Length: 373
Image 1 (cartoon, rainbow, N blue to C red):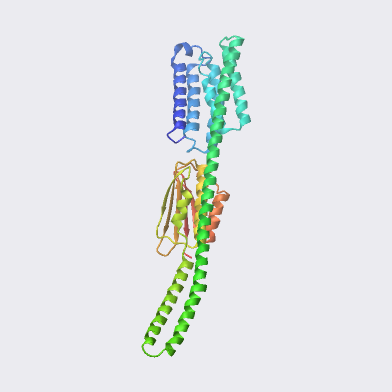
Image 2: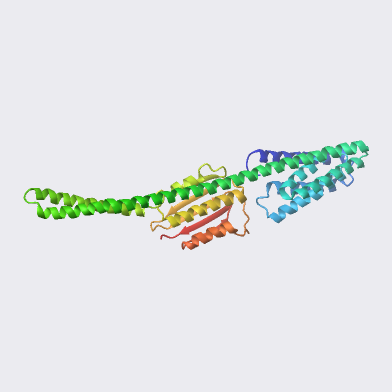
């Protein structure tokens, strides 16, 4: 919950409400007198619950996953204990609703259903402890059970929508990459076709013309010979220009900056800041490798990092070696294990004689270097 939006506001409301309810139980004498444990014991239990809730909600990006799971387990245990030991605090079961809702992020759907059922029973027991009638027990337990189910289903729907948005963003990045590579390949094929036509048709005709003018220069007498010699020189110069143009068209390389611009254009998420040296010219093999590596980093960030922003920088040194830097501001564990995607990046770069490093520093970062061909 790092974005300043509905998630942050909802989390702040939950935290503030939990603190307010705990403070009322501790400092309101009429409620504190109904505690089944000493006030300081209840306060300590509540402080532990609040710490676990805060860590699991606000610090999950900075804590090891094992510790985050332990915090959630503490919430699941402490929430019903707090409710059962303070039966006169009729609003306190809302802690159970918060915890069962948070469970959607941490455990499977069947485990959430078990937690909701257990918490609903705890509400009924709490009402029974304070002397409620059977009808009151059933009504209040049903209300809190319905609240838990509704909250869990709402969060499940939100998570499904978020997953679909991520999948759409990944598909968008893959489609953009395929489109950019196809455009580059089509342009390369068209350039080669034009180069062949220039060389085979126009070059052949100019060669023939030059030879005919050479013969004519020896047969035309008087002042006309000067014009034939000049025409022969022009034909030879034009043939040289055609050959130079053919060589330039054949050697022309993809414009990497344009291809990367098409890749990140209209990307739903995250916000991508792209910087490419405008003078970079690369061969097709290196262009494809850089495009595929950048695409993989974008999809990896979308799937796993939950990042708001991403920075991509591609530069070249005077010798023509490429330097590619990609980083995001998402969450990343320092003890991560490279998956198939990152291994694919390493294989592509090393296959061209380059090097690649992965690091974690306020997000995930990739630094790759590709030598000149």
